[in-house]
Length: 175
Image 1: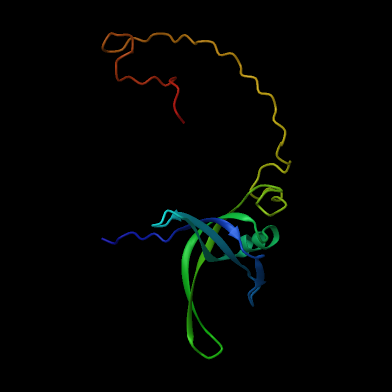
Image 2: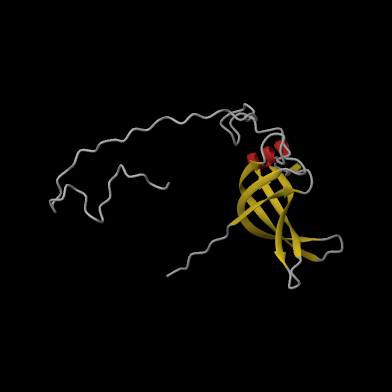
C-alpha cells in the first residue's frame, strides 16, 4: 500500500520588497516575492529574542499578475502553496539549488490604509465589497429576547424528551 505524502506550506508575513513580475518566453506571467516571518522567544537568560526568517515565494499565471499589481513592499499577506526545489547553473557553471514556495493561494491582509500596504483589492478579488471599512463606532442595540416555549414531545422513555443525555436541535451551540 502506498503512503500518502503532503507538501503544504502556509505563510503569513510581510513583503520585504516590491514583487518582481516578469514573463516567460511563452508569455506566462511569473512573480517572485520575498516574505518575512517573525518568531519571538525568551532565551536562557530571560531576554526576549525576535528572529526573522525570509522565504522565497513564486506565483504563476493569473495569481502572479494579481500579486504584481496589488502587493508592494510592507504588504501583509497570506500564502498557501508547496515547497519546490529547482536546480540552475551560475555564471561559473556550478550547479545551484533553490528551494521556494510555489504559491497556490494568496490573501491580502491588513486592510486599506493599514499594515496591508495596498490600496485594497479590486472588485471580485479577495473582497465582496469595495466600500471602505467603517471607522466610527456605531451604537449597538440589543433586541429583547423572549423565552420560546417548545412543545413537549413524548419519547420512548416517557419523560417528554428530556432525558439526561438528550440533544435538542434548538439548543444554543457554541459555534
